Amino acid sequence: MSTATDADRSGVPAGAQMDGLRAPRPVAVRRGRAGRRAGAAVVVAALAAAVAGCGGTAPAESGPPEASAGSAPSIAVEDAVVRVPSAPDVTAGYLTVVNGGGDDTLTGVAADAAEEVQMHDTVADGDQVRMERRETVPVGAGETVEFATGGLHLMLLRPDADLAPGDTVALTLTFERSGDVSVDAAVEDPMAADSPSADADADHGDHGDHG
Ligand SMILES: [Cu+2]
Image (cartoon, rainbow, N blue to C red; front, side, top):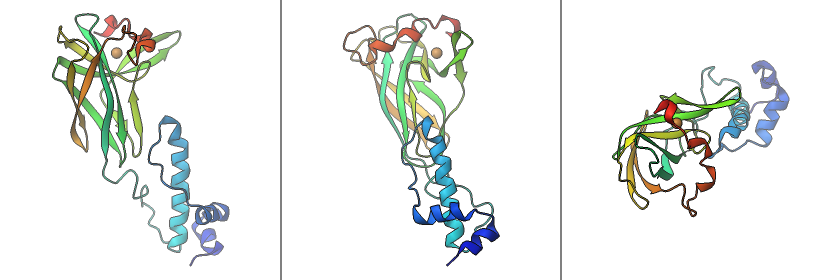
């Protein structure tokens, strides 16, 4: 079993090593953007534990913990909705991607009720807020990525004109490692009082600049 001597030899501060031994932190299963810092702490603790556990002989390029980035992704898509088109050329879609496994990347989206689907992000540009197209969206190990008003969102170009509340739109999300993941999105009218996102439509009133 290793001691502080190993820690000295390996260059890992003894305090960090003891932290790792005393209280190894569980790998976060579900974390959002705010979890990145916590994720780094997990890696530090795991490395310290690994060094302690094998007498400082851990390979230099051991990579991330096994249950994290390198393991198989486990993708679920939840809460998918598509807005009733308010203009003929474009409408918006929202959903949540939950990854319970290793790193993956969303590389594209298609819909059965639109000619094209683009992924957009909402970025601040001085006093303005504008849309920026994203070709890929990383969904890291254990991360949840939300496509929601005011942030990432889907733009459905040239959607079917007769989409109405109660309809469903079949979305196919393509991931680098997981392949295609399909989900039925509920068509909703953002102006309806009972719409779950009726209160957050302000930033999607005008998509004319990139439709
Ligand atoms: Cu957009």
